[in-house]
Length: 333
Image (cartoon, rainbow, N blue to C red; front, top):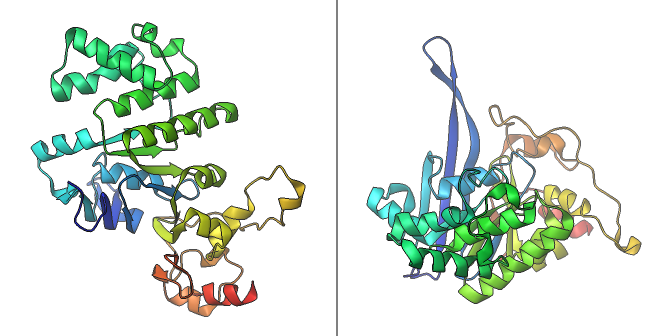
């Protein structure tokens, strides 16, 4: 049952802090605010892309949603069920509906298990399927991702990186989930293989009506794959809009910098690259005001004092940004 407001997944003010322990008694001296108030919603059949630099908190958001890491605060609602407060029985049911494809196709597969055991394990554990029925189910799943039944008794080391990721996709589809979290599923693959996996995911989405939370740092991939894009910086979303609107008119200076780094084959489309100075601030000791102000050429005293909130910008349909300078940039454009 989908939420009455039409959303399959709702994340509200999600926070995930990791304590820093010091001293002989291991007392908490502070917190790394990996995720610091993230909110978004995903409709059924939609793909939401979560992008940003490495270390901005994208993967922590994904793992907090499915409780692979404990969230500090906030709400995650999947089909009107609060995931973060669900008991073990309810969480077991939820994990039949939410699956994940991991970034590393080499490290995410058990080298001591055959492909048949890897893909079939969710069916065996969650639904008690075994014997010839399990073998048939696994063979069907492998065929859906471009592999054959002959691969069932082989081990992960016998496959290429792209084939291993196909095995990971088959495992993610085993329980017929409604939501699939893709944690940078193509970043570890060759460019030629990336397009194959992306096209495979699109075909599977159309065939099974899947909903994707797609995490990536490659904005060219996100533009191709996603319906809505949310840009993260220092544990927060700083801009969110439809993919078409965001790539046509990025408002936040951080987003504009990311966009300028997208490579273009056509020389006429290559603009002047916007370079951000310095490294991202420490999540243990974030700057006051806007977290991007130490690296922003537009920052003034107001940016140093008050943190902007993610709000809808006037004149733009469903375009949200957390920046005090957005109006100025619109005028200057």
